[in-house]
Image 1 (cartoon, rainbow, N blue to C red):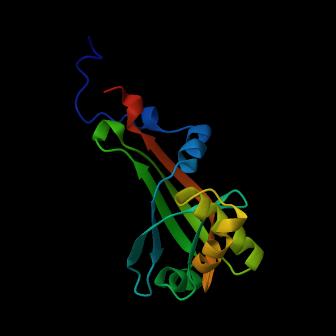
Image 2 (cartoon, rainbow, N blue to C red):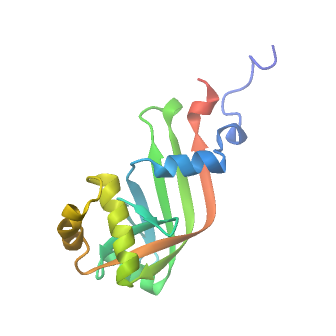
Image 3 (cartoon, one colour):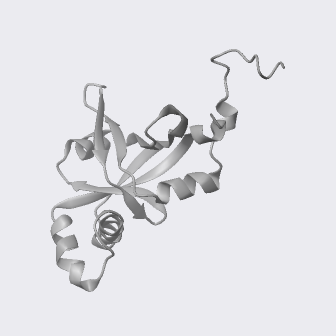
Length: 159
């Protein structure tokens, strides 16, 4: 009976946290993410991004002169949010808090470029090489080094 009378707003955070395996599986899905960096005036600069994986870590490609890259060169702190769900009871997501490493090595840029292309466009084949080359023209990569992870999966509440 006591369980049935649980007041609204009871903290159920521990019930919705994802395991590391669940987080890894979720991140492998085809999602967009919101990437946030700190602007010169301390305000938050957020932008939607596609992402891939570089050396097992989340990574993005961007124009070398983009605001997010300028911000990261000044202060490497960044946060990303990857989420899914249309209603409260289906919401799930992961927030990664850490630092961005700007990568300018062509081989590492290529690795991330193929990952992003394959995730959002089509499986990579040699015939796709010119398209990836165009996509990576005047680009750098940001590899995220995660310091902290926050996750939630409201589907675990069984509403």
